[in-house]
Length: 447
Ligand code: S3P
Image (cartoon, rainbow, N blue to C red):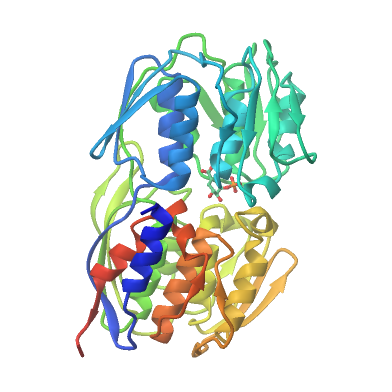
């Protein structure tokens, strides 16, 4: 059975009733962003990198397989993945185009990683990835020497990175707040002939900066400007453990807050401040969360106990000030916003139109089917609650977007009834155990 078929089968087995709650301990699946980066830094470092709990999801597998095609030896035994570092950007010419599937992070980061190779490398992706913008990364890299040939449409995959021997330093002000763009530029800056400067428009996740420092690189940040020294010596392989992904945990945290009588503990949840925007929204309103076993080394993490809300939350305000810290949580926050008192306004979120789907449009379309009061804005959403969600009368569609699929499953928990969701299998992109975990955590006292 393929992963997709497994998920469809598990979804068939999932029972949703109107009197269920979430009970028990949820080991948050590992962070997707950190998993990609651990493989990439492991590949260019000298010596072995041992990664504990690499996320075994489709997107991360794309990074792993593509690095293997580039000659990097990577093996996984149980929860441990070992990368044999190349001691630099010393890759082999791949025999086939690198198929990056649905993974925007792999594609953007690889554009920086592979900007200076002696041979051509073709990147291809699935239908969704082939419509996502790439010029945001390619154009600033072309300005410092990278050569790219778009094979189809300007700005999109498929494309070929052409042979190139030289990268100049970057001196670039990013026009958008994007960790993928920032990370691609950092990976290129490590290969440049002089130190680079990259100005950031707003905060975005900083896993690349943290990991580069951990592997022995030299990067500083002053007033949102990053200064990166090119590598004189190779980075050094490390041993690391990937913490739980806040963007994944948010789905079950929301379900636990809303399903009566729930008591859920999510373990090993990342507390990296560039990722805790959702928790901050909840904490600001004293939601029933308790933090246990906090760790501070490297990427900070904690276990979090969640109990059902006794009084409903009030509406949220999301804009450029906090968007970067919760960008991937917008689908589930939008669903939560239908249950809070007042009008939640999400602004400055135009970037969501360039995710796996046009998320602003798809969130509004799908939540409207449940009777939500939701309006699409050019750069955001306006959602008024609380609304008693109702059974949709038209079919639900995740549009092959994993985070929309999980939002729809949580919406079904709220109405207490399971309905078919087209594209449910896309959950494998980031969270292949989502349905299985739900099945073991959902309890119904009346049964
Ligand atoms: C990611 C950065 C974010 C996020 C994506 C993962 C990363 O995208 O939405 O899921 O790992 O760098 P942008 O950097 O394009 O905002």
